Length: 113
Image 1 (tube, helix red, strand yellow):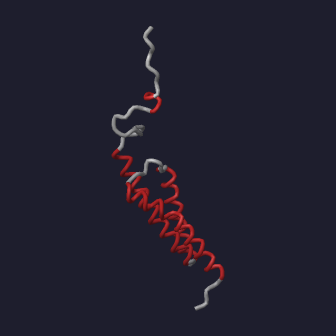
Image 2 (cartoon, helix red, strand yellow):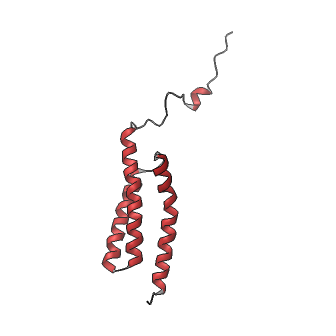
Image 3 (cartoon, one colour):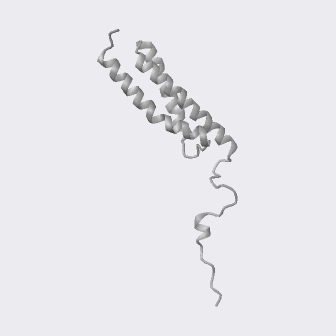
């Protein structure tokens, strides 16, 4: 089996790229907290990874194909969690429960004179 240097470099780059993304996916799956994630950014990222996967297939490049497809799966997981999370929380409602805003709790009481 003769593996080229470019295949090794592509595989290493794919591993590093996926490794950096996995903790985010794990955290989102465990906690369900996706409030800080941009829906638009993940939609664009998912589409880009779909295109990279098709490109890797067209080239016959296993590193591009495999790691783009794996990244696509992880990105879809976060995208689905984000869409589900945005349906359960009304738009613009970032507060949890009936807690007052931080600026409201620091407001000084008027002094009776």
